[in-house]
Length: 520
Figure 1: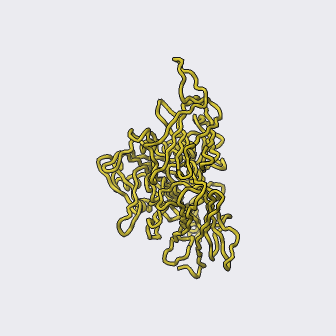
Figure 2: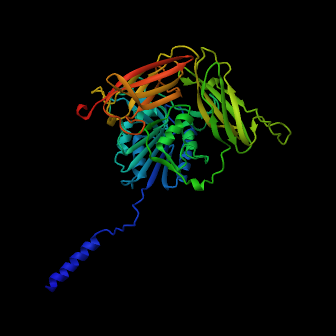
Figure 3: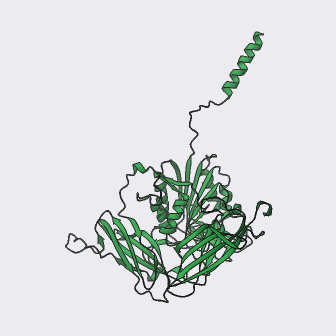
């Protein structure tokens, strides 16, 4: 009897010590945050971009070092020249990742959309100046798939939307519905559409590149690089993926940022609003009254805050044949302030004194037939070198004429002919022959009768160049209504409208969402 009692006590003790100690008041394990930053500036067959990617890397590193969640950051600056090198860097940087952790991969490089072959897809060019290789979207995904937890991919490269199946001209999009990085473990933010180039800042068309790319610096400005955290709309200390994307849609003008998934609340950058001690940026708080102009109203009014005496200038670039015409860009210095005298007694041309400033730029040479797009940059000069502080697309719209509106949709599940929101967002193509302000809606239809609008994709939004051919704009619908609920099965109508002068033009396209028993 005694032996059985001792044995029972020992067995109970073993069970107690074998179980992990869990306290009800013990907080759950915190995720670990890691980032790998890749920059390529020197190439074999592509143009060198030095020091653009290098400066992009420094800006991203600075942002992540300020993040209150505590990132472990690794970087490869100009040494990643092959798929094998990239794979080795990824495996090393994220070797300790576990479920619940978060891993960022940022790449600044050249990009390309390879439409040849049976599986057209986006690719990135890696080079150290001596060796060069292309890495496709599926190859990159194969490198990242083994990493547990959530993965955020940020890419600054031409045609980078092709990596996530976004931003294609009609007929250019791959037929496959199996889009890379579409699984729930991935988030992605890229600098341009699949059919669109991306751009970096240059002093002039003949000189070497200077500074960083438009995309990364716009992203950095929105995420608090200069202490403003302009992308954080609700000022809660968390810059979400959707907030960053919405900010870039307005403040990033040189190309069109693309995101996956839409409307996502994933926190990209986090800061403590109560501990903002960063000095104010020399130029900040930009507000543009409007960016849609006509020949009858060709003036852009905007305001900004100057925190210290700064030399300010403006650059206006027009789009020609689908590309920004940098060679004929106009640049002029600010002359609205009385410039302070220098030590030698001469005026410092372009110098602007501290305070809130309001400025106007006139496109007085705009005529009825001279419609198109312009890029307005507000720049400041540091040691004689220009730095872009704000950038906007100016939509120069005609006062009369039929824009030739058309609407079509690219259904992710091509075989069924119906849209299944579970298969990814619906790409809505709105064709227009010249710049307009578009209103695009998705409306439920019942027995031929139009019901209440399900979702507004655009409300009087001025169009912008997206590198598309023919001319047009892309919108994406995730199948959600205005309240964030999934739209039910049935017939829907996508309608686009635009006012030109006193006339309103419309076009529409029918979409069908199948019920559960009708899905393929």
